[in-house]
Image (cartoon, rainbow, N blue to C red):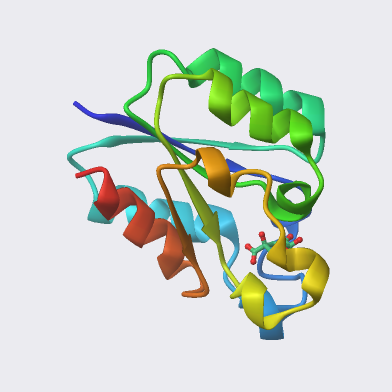
Length: 138
Ligand code: DQA
């Protein structure tokens, strides 16, 4: 069975409550239930942290054994050389995901430290961005 993990960065624990006009009104837990049912032939793990180092530790932990990582580093996407380096250091391919179209937003969101080392980038399709990322590993 293929093993994937979704890693979400800061403030994504508030999905459903946080700026619903940008990020929608569905919680990630609710969404996760749904995609686990949709993609029942693969194992999908989930990790969320608001702490940069914890995200790096998780990338190290899964990055040599899992088949794929779906990473929404949220605000750290635009600031974290450390997470970018971790993505480069590991073997498991990483697909970078964003719920919103970061290029239609503020200029500081146009920069990503993840993209240069990602297998691909999917953004702007709401929570569906995660489903498209999962499909890319099938
Ligand atoms: C985000 C976009 C980031 O710019 C922002 O800081 C987030 C969420 C997205 O999924 O659209 O927290 O990664």
